[in-house]
Length: 270
Image 1: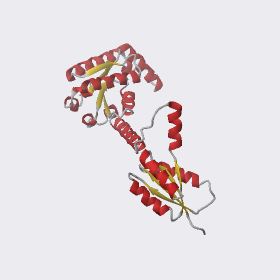
Image 2: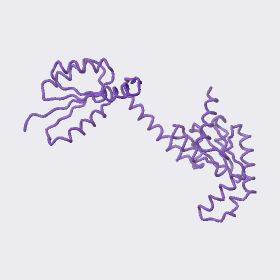
Image 3: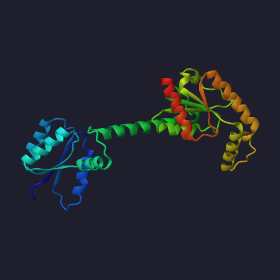
Image 4: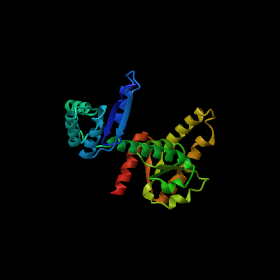
């Protein structure tokens, strides 16, 4: 068995991109004689020089994702000096985008990690919305960025999920005349509470359709106008008592209502 062919993977971040590319490329060769060595978080020339000193002793190639130009250029120059083939994985794509769209790359290492952090924050917000949906656990009220309150079919759940994708932790509480509102609603800043209301005729239509979808009679009290008016009266009194902002969702798409909620929050924070 011959000497191993060593692929050095260098990155100014974690190095996963370069490693995945290296693995994909090596899988195209009928050889088990490859070895890979990954060196993440390259931040200075001394690190590069040390790695190249090692690499020149072996049958090697360098794949790298280093976006800081000074370090990238140093690596390319030293690789030529040591007669080691170095392949910049990102530069051809950066150049193509820059020339095609006339925009400059940031050349900041680790930006994809920041995107991943944003993704995980979004996942956490979605999990929060599910956990504290429909008043399942009143403890979520104090932990939430936003608390949505309203009678049934005022889009509380879809709004919670939409706002969760904006990294907002949302709890929602259904309002029923027979059920006392959670005391936690009175223990938080009313600026965090958004009351959702709707035209009773529109609610009547939506509830009747909901009952049909469930295979139930649309004459049930849930969809009766008397019941809806009583619920709305109770909800309006509670919202006034709490001193929270309210939004009529009757003819609004979820995206439009969410936009209004975010605007209210921005105004509150100014």
